[in-house]
Amino acid sequence: MYNLHVAIIMDGNGRWAQRRGLPRTAGHIEGAKAVNEVVETAARAGIRALTLYAFSADNWGRPNTEVAALMRLLRRYLMTETGRCIEQSIRINIIGRRDRLSQSLVHAIEQSERLTASCTGMHLRIAVDYSAQYSIVEAARRAGADLDVDSNRFQELLDEVDHSAAPAGAVDLLIRTGAEKRLSDFLLWQCAYAELFFADCMWPEFGESGLRAALDYYAARQRRFGKVAEAGS
Image 1 (cartoon, helix red, strand yellow):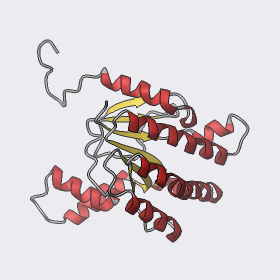
Image 2 (image 1 turned 180 degrees about the horizontal axis):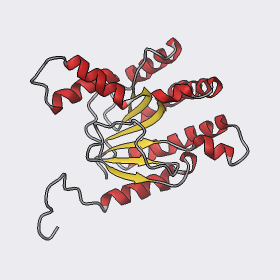
Image 3 (image 1 turned 90 degrees about the vertical axis):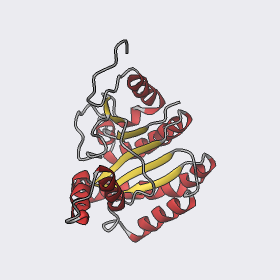
């Protein structure tokens, strides 16, 4: 069992579809199916918190039709999967800005969070309209001239900015699909000591086997946090 905070950059939906001669929205639909498989696998593996990068602040620059399709998929996911999450005691939390989302989507978010608030199993966090740089700057602004702010207090401010319903802690394992190797403004503060796993497959192809491979990779790593390894370890 893995008592970890795992974060995933779900990259490659559009490219997966284009390689098959399909519209990019078809890739996002298939990607949503992969989300279900990965969430269930993570819950069975004992993952403490799973944060999925669903829509970045930069994604607003995509075609309006694609943005609208992504927002519909998110709303549909919340409406259809909240009940299943309750059955598995998975707590849902959407992190990121909400002032640029539609009222209907915000309502769906608040309803899912309310209905799963007492769940004690895995904490499922979905990042929507999220930018780590924005969050860090806003948290610093809220800290103001308080000279007593330490890393723990700053994390609390980040949680407030991001609408994080409960502390998820530092990221232990960051996964990115889609053959790209960058963080793309995702959980920069929380990933300070994260192990990084980059998968060449597109997100719709990741699934249970991909997550298991990433967890096996993590299990083989030696985490020293800047210290010297003990003799014999």
